[in-house]
Image (tube, rainbow, N blue to C red; front, side, top):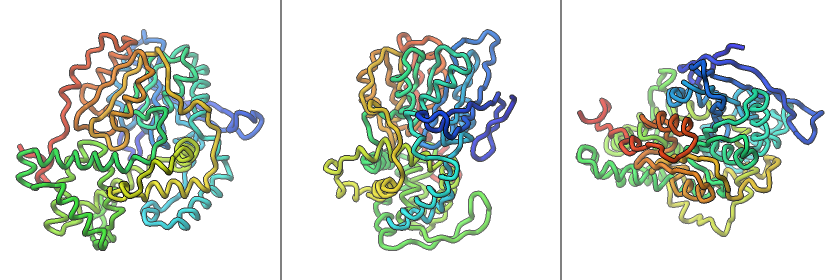
Length: 461
């Protein structure tokens, strides 16, 4: 039936055809609880469309495919000319029995292990009334995906996966190679990787690279000097004591007060380096805080980011994936806690994941989920050279067993490359050709990060 899909803020709205597919929550008990998967199809524009659609797989884990498309539809406009775009909200996300928990995200930043455990148990108690959270893992999600493919009558499909969605795409390729025509992996999680232990190190490296790029830019360095020194000085200040800030809330417009401390600072730093657009204002915000005592921009950015990112993620589904597929594979002997403690993220996130996973149930996971891939299916891998979550080396690890692949790295760009101006054309050409052979991706070499803001008015003229 006709429907509309929209992003978290309700700003971007798109028409589609929507339906539901009922599946067993526990495939081993087909007579047990049933859940409904939300499926949306954005029809191809051409009446002579190609028979193989593009399925979008969202990141997080915990984001819905419909949310991803609504926020990034222009990147797929060329593909949609000739192909349907199919959006399956992965079980536990969007409108597919979402595993949402009503957390106070700001208070959790400073929660003790006991407080985090209590919140986790409360979330589980709430969700248990309508879900067994163990059955919301990647291994079950790819089975759902193939059931949707079959129900819609497609013989072969193309896949786009972003961030965690690359793990889903890789595992679908592993399970259903005969139904997979091409794969686009954007911000690649290599199959062998258990995400978590290196995130703080990767984020620190990306932050320093971003601030160093400002120091090497004549306009930016003239205005701000060495932003790395500014960042380090601010860290010392906030580690000593939080700063009382009154700011205008970016969504309500009301004057709001808060104690801005190290974890708030770490949140802004981490999310600011996801994209060059957000990173463009970071040296300015750091400078205002350190040299003018003006923490309002940092506090406002924190409030905006908290609202944007938490509204897009179903944390229960996130926990089901991470506590099954990542945390159990951490190797304590390989984790250098002293090195992590020297980063702006420190060990807080890593310890929080391990704490909540002591309570959260583990679910079904295929034995080969973390095995290297071996495939002849054409794969296009996209990386940002300054990605704080999935740096290019992860894609290099993933591509080893992919015999028909091309890896494009965008220097100085962050997490997710579908926003690069010409990437929509590159992806469309790849899907149309069905191979990386002869693919012209030269335009991607011209991609540049957004210039740094040297004042609230923007970059230099």
